[in-house]
Image (cartoon, rainbow, N blue to C red; front, side, top):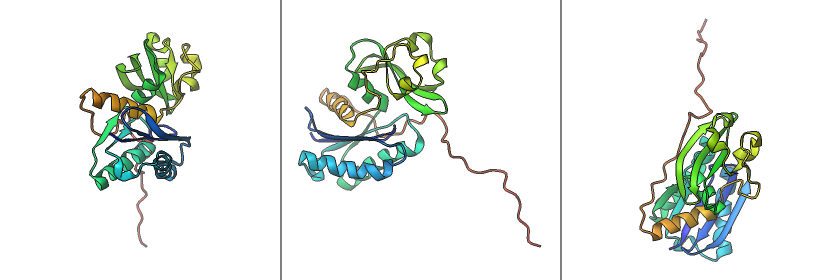
Length: 219
């Protein structure tokens, strides 16, 4: 098994190569405006650092969000294009699950990512492998009190610490593709069927078709 993992659902552009047992190489850069510029460069860099050509990759796993429309689509489209060109399976995993896996926590906690518009994408976990609710999108002050009080990871929790009293500064801020790959490898080894790479859109996109056009007449 040689998994190529990537995620662009958050400001982090992250790529990793995993051989089923460990991460061989990884890359991560936080830049919310340059997903399209950075992703393929990162793929080339990771393959080069691992010393493994693309032809040896046996499957891809991509973060499916939730996340902003444009950034999320960059990762999904790239993974599907590589998969189609090489005839490889492409799996999708919830981005928040990858972030949760990286915490290694064995107790209940919450993951919150920045959703903009003064909202967060969040999910609740029983431990680093087990999601119990979500993902959902809400204003941080509207989360259930018992959820907000849990140990918290993610950029959304860091952005609104007044609403996440359990914020843990030692836990990851953004997802890392290495964790996403490790989670996928673990589930595949256990015989689980991973979901397809379908985006998790929890609200309508920011961009809208203009309305209220003025009629133009020729005199």
